[in-house]
Length: 222
Image (cartoon, rainbow, N blue to C red; front, side, top):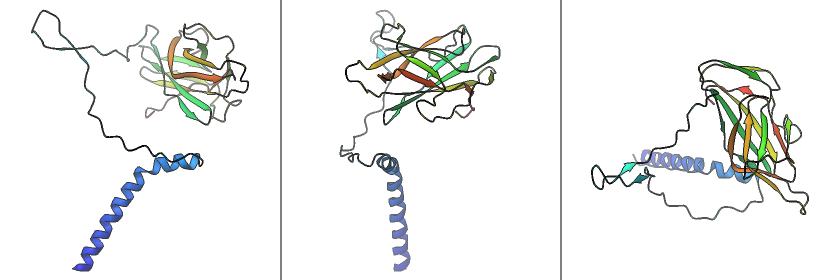
């Protein structure tokens, strides 16, 4: 009986240790990619209370003192073109930046197109930055796979994606680093464009280059 209890206790300890190791796997991968980084000594943050809907005071008429909910912005509205463009988060690693742009056909008809998106970096006033060059293909910036230009047809509700890459390298300290907070994107030349807000901005350093992959149809799981 004592042996069985010891075995059961050991099994419990092993299960706990595996769970603990799983929690630190992400941090270990980060250390592996950057061995010189110091370990994070910041104490664990106490979980905060769950977020609640913002409430605004009700109008003077009606039930006194009863709050009304502020309407949430509609992020799924379909433009008149029937094409919705959305930016993804910016991924950063060792000076390299990457972002996915998603094009969704929210219209009533299928949409046939292909090739590379048409991009224009914009400043704070949404004016074009003339010193930024857009390259078809990411090869001069990084080795992100590019499917190349090919026909794409989107039925209603289907999406396509394109990956944008750039570097924030500053090689000349006498120049001003470029950071474009906005990006105008059109699916193809002459198609309706949308102005997207880039998470953290397009911090191009003084490289002045953005590389883009061709549009490819997104899997339903993406």
